[in-house]
Length: 311
Ligand code: NAD
Image 1 (cartoon, rainbow, N blue to C red):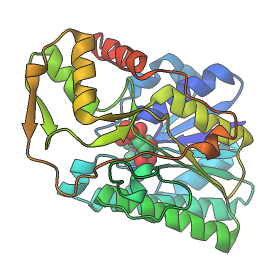
Image 2: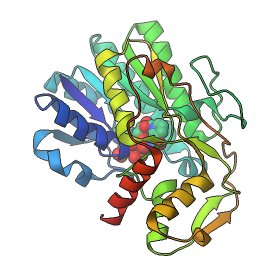
Image 3: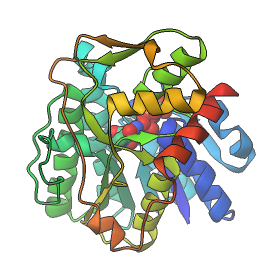
Image 4: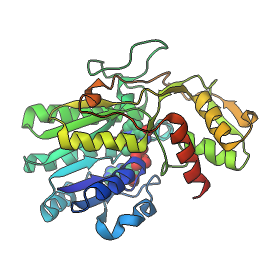
C-alpha cells in the first residue's frame, strides 16, 4: 500500500509511521508536515531512509494532489492538526486553517481521485463534556464542542461527512480519547507533569484537578487506526477509548509515585475557561473490529516517564 501520513512528525502520527513501517516494510510512506512547534523530525530518525519526508501544508491542494499522483497514494491518514486547547483559546486562527481549511483541501484532493481513502483522525472533544456518572459518548451523541480547538475539529468532521454524502468520497473517521506516551509536545499535561517533577518544580493543575479523561496509550490508539485502514468500512466513524478514566489529580499522583516524587509538588492554578469536565467514549464500534487496548495505565505511565527521563 502507498500511504500519505499528514502530521506524521507530530506525537501520534510519528508513532503511526514507525509502527506501520515495522508491520508493512514494503509499503511506501510519504510524510507531509508543516513542522509546527509540536513536530520533531527526530522522532522519525530510525526510518528516515525508508520514507519520503515533505515539509508542507495539507491546505496546499496542488502540493497534496501532486504527492498523490507522484507516489500513487492509496490512503491518506490525516493526523495533521493544531491540537492544543490552550493555544486555541489564545488564537483560534491557525486552528481554522489546519483543522477546517486543511481538511477541505484534502476533500478536494479526494474528489479528484475517487478511489483514494481518507482516514480522518478526530477527537472525543467534538462532543463537549459529560457530567459525572453520565453514560459515555456514543455514535448517537450530538456534537457540542466547548473550545475553539474542539469546534474546529467538529467543523472538519462535518465537512467530511457532507462530502461523503455529496461527492461520494471515501472517508473513515476515528474519534479517540486523550492519548499519552512518548513524543508528546512538552506543553501538554503529562509532559508538563513529568518535566516539572524531574526538575522538582511545582506542577500546575487546573482548578482542583477533578476533571476526568479516558487515557489511551498512543500505540494502542495506532493499533486501532491500523485496524480501521485494514478492516473498517467507508463512511463509518469509529470511537476509540481504553476505558481508563482518571481525574487529572490522579494522573499527577500516579506519575509522581512512579517517579518517587512528593505530591507536594502539585500546585492548583485557576481553571481554564470553558474547561470540559469529563470525557469517555463507548468504544464498541472499534472493539467490534477486534481491537482492545494492550497497555495498562500504570505501564503506559512508566514507559512515558522512562522516555522523557532519557530524552
Ligand atoms: P500534534 O500537535 O502532536 O501533531 C500534529 C502534527 O500536525 C504536527 O506535527 C504539526 O506540525 C502538523 N500540522 C499541523 N497543521 C498542519 C498542516 N496544516 N499541514 C500539515 N501538517 C500540519 O498532535 P497529536 O496529538 O499527534 O494529534 C494528532 C491528531 O489526533 C489530531 O488530529 C488531533 O486532533 C487528534 N487527537 C489527538 C488526541 C491527543 O490526546 N493527542 C486526542 C484525540 C484526537
